Image (tube, rainbow, N blue to C red):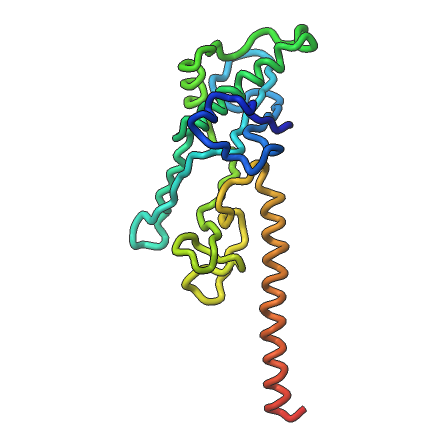
Length: 217
């Protein structure tokens, strides 16, 4: 497992700004698997899988209401690979993974690659055919400033326009972190715990005051 960046002089930056949070964060991640995780699946053989994960995506999907029935599932459009930056980055990530297994240390192990795609067009098709979710979705209930006319929750995680309801999960992240979402979700939960304790502490103080006044304790 490791995180990697496009070089600073990558041609894509001539048309697109760098979406990563900073110069020490990744654009893609490499994961190693014992076998194949996506088609095509050969009938026989032993395989090493290398998954390349886009961790600074610029494509944006959507979740919309399907009907007036609240029990109907929503319409989910992940909108994968909708921008040139995303497909460019994954193309370079695939090439980086291939360079890795081309090192002399692998010469006695790697017989061949499953895919022979080499040109940009071939790699783009290969990526689009095999791309799938890494299950780190975020942003469907994004946080924004309290007075902003967009976003679902305010900085205290309270749902705007609703009283007494907080959202405490990865959906409040405005963008996908350039990492696994687990640590970020833990941080959100810890912050939420502090906010809730503070809110209930204030309320309990008020309740105790009224009890004392009412019963003359």
